[in-house]
Every structure is written in C-alpha cells, then in structure tokens.
Length: 218
Image (tube, rainbow, N blue to C red; front, side, top):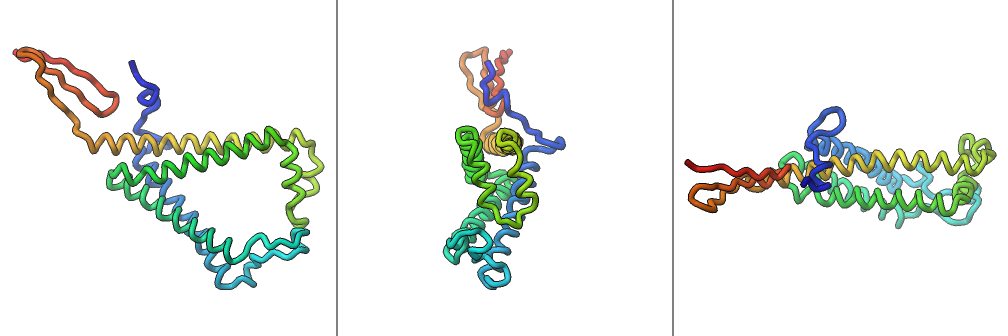
C-alpha cells in the first residue's frame, strides 16, 4: 500500500525542473528580495529624511510614528536572518545536505500559517477590509472607488487573492519538501541485503517508492 507521502512525492516541479533546481531557484529569489529590502532599510537608517520613514500625522491622520529606529533595526535583523535561511536552503539543495533545507521549509510553513490566519480573519470579520481601507493614506490611488464597492464583493476579491497566494505557497512547500526527501534519500544507503535462508535473499531499497524485491539464489 502506498502511503500519502509517497503518493505526492515527485522529483520534478514547474517547468519540468528537478526539485533541487526549483529549490535553488526559489532560495536565490528569496535572497534577492530580502537583499533589496535590506538595502532599503539600511538606506532609511542612514538618511531618514530622504526616505521619510517617520510618517507625519497629516499623512495617516494619527500621532503615532509607524516606523522608528527600533522597528527599522528589527526589520533589518529579520531580513538578515531570512537571507541566511535562504542561503542555507540554496547551499543544502546544491550540495545535497538535507539538514540545511529544514529551516527554510519551517519558514514556509510559518508563512503559510500566517496567510491562512489572515484569510480566516477576513471570513470571520469581513468589516476588517473596510477598516483597513480607511486607514490607508488619502493619496492612495483609487481609494474612494474601492471603498464605494460593495463589502461582500471586496471580501470575495480579497479571499480569492489570498486563495491564489495560498495555493502557490502550498505548491512551493511541496517542491521544497520533495527536494528534502530526495536529498535525504540520496544520503542513505541505496541497497541493503539481508539473507534470510539458504535459498532466499531479500533486497530492500530505502529510497522512494520503497521497493521490496525477493530473489532466489541458485
């Protein structure tokens, strides 16, 4: 009987790439995104006036500064951590070290759970969409047109958008998981031989799909 994990196991991903290649591309892409974010944050720390990370009350209608030095430093540390995790996944997939892929896989699960909670909150509290739109700056494009739309239509559009994101993230999680299984399988012994009787040899292959072969010795 084939287990559910083996049923979804595949060594290929989108564009007919190998799961190792897909994981390497995904890790590099995440590193580039976080590197750009890191450069923006460092530039904001060096020249806060130019990037205006202290938003005034006239822009948001509030007296609270949404971004200060402490928040910028925390975001910078998170970006550095993400670059490290993505670099570990890229290196682990390239050098076939399964343990290096685990932190990136855990991050994917955490990110997927957060997005799922956002979708659930929109379903349970549909008015949060309108509340969020009201908090946007007055200069936000098409703000009035979006707010004049029916609330149920807005909720449906937001859920559809989040659903597409969740589907794509779930596919990427499956790709990284299959890469982890492939790399960890490559690291184990490919064939183990057990002689049970004088005329029977049982050969077990631990790599998927876990084939059990029985041969007779003449």
